[in-house]
Image (cartoon, rainbow over all chains, first blue to last red; front, side):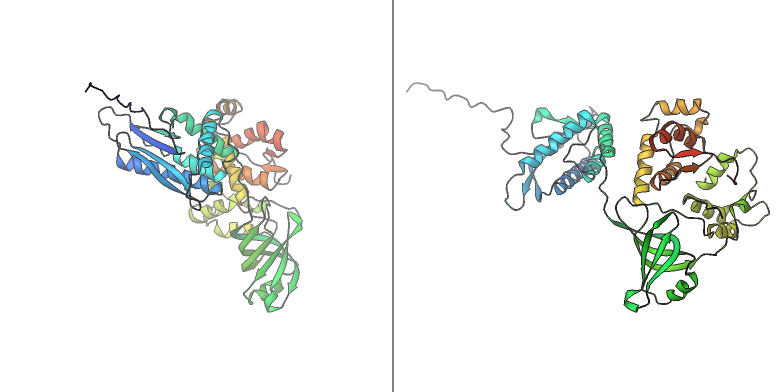
Amino acid sequence: MPDQKRPRKKRSAQPARSTPSLSLKIETTDTKRRNVNVDDFLKTAEKWLSALKTFALEQGELVKWEIVDLKKSSAFIQVQPVKIRTQKPAAKLVKTWDDGLRKIEKTGRPPTKFTSSSLAALEEFVFSVPQNTVVSVGNGDATAGLPITAVTQRRVEQAAHLRPVVLREYTSHGSVRGRLAVLDSWKPEERSFHLQLPLAPDRHVRCTYRDPTLVTSLGSGFEGTVEITGLLRYKPEQSWPYAADVDRIRVLPRSPEVSLRDLVGLIHLPEGFDSVSYVRSVRDAE
Amino acid sequence: MRRVLVFVFLQSVSEHLTFSVTLSDGTSAEEKMSKFLDNPYVVPLQATQEVAMTSSRLQFRFDSKRMPELRDKAIAAGVPKDNASKLRRADADVLATALVYKAARLTTYDPLLLFIGKTYITPETGLEPHPRTSIDK
């Protein structure tokens, strides 16, 4: 039989990218020690994954992240988001993330799909790059990796600060002073009153309270200035609370016992200090 | 009677005065400061989310690492060198509070705040940081 040589099958240089994926690669800059420190790898990978997860959540995508490739030689990991409901790869999520990251790197401006939470998580990742390493992120294409450099950090920081935070109604524990002007009700189930704010007279803070002993404070504070302490409720972009759950009430004196003028000359300026520096040191407890 | 607006940062001053500052008559500052802060015309202002974020943005903006001309311009305007490189947190809190609560005037003697106010803040927002020559005015 004639000698027939089977043609050799050429190995492709890279496997065909059949599924959308994102990659993280860490290399050391130390030519003598090529192995990446495991702590460095795990911490960086954790921050990277956290940024990906936050991004997916903000996009409304319920996905799990699966490893599709893992190489020791340069601490390389490739992951793929898979939709929990359909078990199919979330290709659009990958593209949006990758395109967005490259836009940030190029312009320092936040892409539309990157919320302030996504940018904050991304900022945390890019600033977690270990010393003496080169960290690159990619979209599975080995030639298109994006190294995380000082420029990248600066661009992400810029983008994060350009994205306004969406404010929601929130609460904060604190105090507010106002004129006790309206008593809503003495009924136990409707214990509330209104405070009129001195710097925003058209604003009333609706104060509710549970402790019945506070009623005596209300009586003596009527038409005067009281300070309430408790859980203050704020609407977005409003400087003043609109409501409060009151824990304590303090009735303030109707006329001041110590005025601003009385404070003049209380403290002598130490030698060698100018007044601005001294007041700043007192204020900042230096 | 005059209304006096006192920013919340004074609360931290009063706390510090309570524990570590003796007045010129040898007594602690606590009693006088507490009584002054109980003045019904003193309004401590809460550090709301908006104040915190505005303060953060001001610190980010007025930093010579990002605004290289800030330091030289501030020094040329008379700001001491050790205070000319960036807006520190406490000063940013004060300025942010004034901006968020829409104050018309911010009384301050801090040279960097006065410089930033005159050069950037007043033209952009109308808020005027400037020193007060007398407590009667």
